[in-house]
Length: 537
Image (spheres, rainbow, N blue to C red):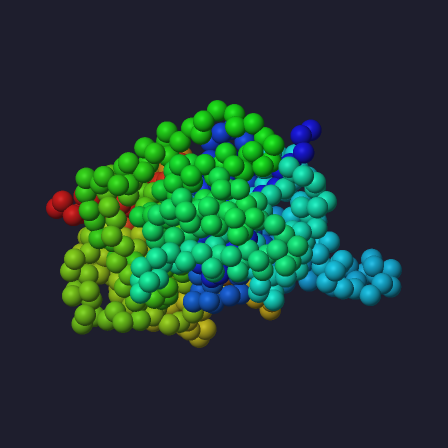
């Protein structure tokens, strides 16, 4: 068996430079050359996973098929590579320390003093090599969260240093992503922040093999030469990463810069065939040359921060390209929607998506949005909490249960049409205990859901504690809210829809997690198509 090769991606100068996009773009190019490639993310915070983090702090929590609550960068990895990730693809400092402390409690260290070096670093190295032991991958790209010099990142940087040494020459390389800022007052790009960042990395014992420089302006040959000289890399390994109009352009930009060729050369691997990006570029062409435009209202509670709904926004990009349509997502805060202003807020909106979320805040605004879409024949799509809001709205305004609610919002509601799942009632730990991961759903024939999916059995990813109360399903079905998708093992209603409506569907799961460039999610594709139809009318 050929030895798995490793690429480590570190960052310097500032956060949010796009390590995840660079890692995903390089992985895409290597995959397109025929290499079996995956990406993993190591995050330096002490939470065991992002599941307990506030969306305003960390953006969305992404969920994998096997039920891992992970960093949102794993979404980028899946969207670019069209390959599922798993528990092993995202590790936090919290998980590392938890594992080491559990081993210490079991007596596995035989009375030794447990220290950051070697015990924590050994645990990190083991986790870094876990995916490589499967024999499924030729190249594993590991993104290190945070920036070089951060106190919390030091154990990871030391682990990378050791692992590069352990694996030997040509088996592991380090890519350092940094910033080359443009100073308007001086009218020039400045290399000093990058030089300092590389120096900090070298003080930790790591030499960068490739420099990827984020910049707003083209890097001249003179600047590339200067960076190569003072950062101790070859000039061909100084890669420009200029601002792009969409993240999906970045693989082509990295191809032009030769990032994949430099990486393969340093790993002593053949170039193989030129990257096959035909389908990728077809998607890009459709994305950049839309024939239609629609405005979709995204009704949510965390709309101030784009990353809170990252996967939904990306799924709209994929579905928009599939429909040759530019989707303008108009964020509307549900807390500020009421009966008096709703018509004004929605006057330029073609379709409404009510987004996931937790807690009581902004709930009445979401319910009002569902009602507006239902009564005005606007295409409606509810996800997770959005689906639950459609059940409450229908119960109140069609079935006549004026006090219908979810026990999440009102534990004493006389009509709990949405309530806590049975298996959740004795759960006290909040981390990693929701209904998570991929679950089966059986779709009834002659329904909108069946028309969309074209099959009777699907698997979709979940992240919730509350469910549509089965005691109310029969009455609501009689009143016209059809349960068109059900979990065969638990009887949990997964999909609801209304007949004789242009497009009205709510799903308990998160379809946005499975939408990729290669496979746009059919629910989003059909929702955008319905929005185009509504716009034309």
